[in-house]
Length: 316
Image (tube, rainbow, N blue to C red):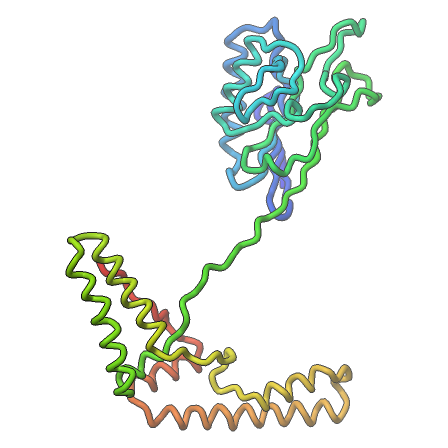
């Protein structure tokens, strides 16, 4: 998607991906000999880069921080598999990760020490972990492993740090929807109307023993819901089109089994389906004309695809 050079020490790269876009901030912090003013300027630039990253994206910060986090575990930010002892620069780096909801991936896995250190002195006597790769906490479970590659040959005293990610989306569970009931039977069926009134009356007797407030409302709500499901008949499940018949559906299944759409058999069945659909729709509309005007308008909106939401507001 693009990259932005915010300073000579901070580079922002944005990648388009699925299911999430990726924002990568590549850094190279001032050395230990630099002044506090240079460190403040570096972290200010890093904050500006982080503000350009969206929270719903995968946000990665990687590079040379010239800081030692050490083996000290710090909540979810730094794991217990760091290397060495935390120094002052390491404290500030952990504080920045905590404030920005980042976790340090290469301190969370129990790798061999040669997979932990990221920098070696020219004489190879001193080895430290000063390069880090972080990711926002939202995707911490996507990190499968993170480590260094000491065998890499690319002419630097720093070692590459790699991180393997596998993002999986949580399956959405649809909430249980209440059954659709034939409420018009309360107006048209005398027997159902009487049994419904008796059921609600029995429940409402419990309200006399309750005080005012939420408990009284909960009993009233339970009375209406349970009495509705017990006394009012449920609506039969239909296809998306109210006028659709089983005969038409059988013809459609038969048409699906024909692979050659240019043959005479396919054309005959297709013509028959269209004629039956027209007859079924006309018969359904004719049946609706005998009902009250409100029902007629509702059916017209269903045919034209302009059906409105049938839910009502809440009672306070």
